[in-house]
Image 1 (cartoon, rainbow, N blue to C red):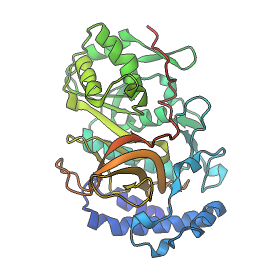
Image 2 (cartoon, rainbow, N blue to C red; image 1 turned 90 degrees about the horizontal axis):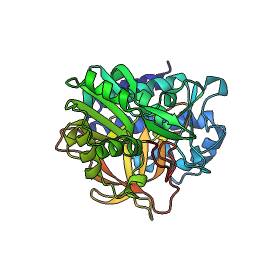
Image 3 (cartoon, helix red, strand yellow; image 1 turned 90 degrees about the vertical axis):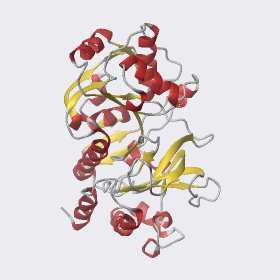
Image 4 (tube, rainbow, N blue to C red; image 1 turned 180 degrees about the vertical axis):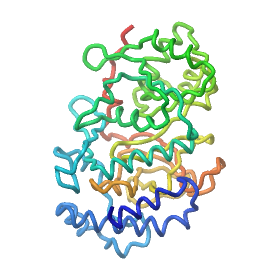
Length: 374
């Protein structure tokens, strides 16, 4: 292990929401500068980009001044990597609708290890450390082993450390379609009715293929101790006039739990290993080994608390691809740089939506307008 990797691990060893900004930022900034140097030495294209940045990275006094990449530059095939092809163990692909180009994220063994460790640390803070039955509202093929893995598979796999056993309750139909397996779902609910249970699904899949059919048949699973995590775009649900409250209430109704046991988290394969779950106050939190900057769409300057802008994600996790500083096509509002009432330290924000007229990402490769098979 290199000295740089050891410093990354040292920051990851800190409880993810325990540091005040003034205690975290000097080490975080120094580490990012060293990672930029490392990436500079590994890839001539990246070196040329950094060389033309208006501020010399070593002279930067804040993370916001470091050179960031537009996330669209990761839509390359082969993937934009900082390691040799033989070192790439897996390539993650973002979800994308038909005809669009997905991002391709090259993972070596070290980055993949940190990815799994980081997701587990974040999820543990919200769920606790114990293992529990894990219901995946998807098909087993989403996590098929191979050289490539999609966004759905990466999210499903990231929660596996909390599983005592895994049950999938969907099966594929046709090309890209899904169908709920109600017998398997009801059998799982009966077996674990009074137990702590973890459920994960893409936002659109949960609503379209599970909540709507169960509500139509007035079925409640009677699982009050469930924790339901979900991620993925809201665009397809907004088209159906489904807002966050309606979504949470619908899931609570069919699972028989309180709405506060539904946890939405923001994440993207380009920001591998970092997820931003909602706390009890409805805010998404940034862990110690990452950061979020919200930039004005016109000036690209960081905005103040309470203002909206484009999300820049920052992370010390990747060393196999240049994902340290990425300007996304998403919008957010900074709620606070510290002091959320839930008790977690550091930046918290609320997701707003996509940048107007930006490319619409797919929702786990589920096509717009496809109706569930019954």
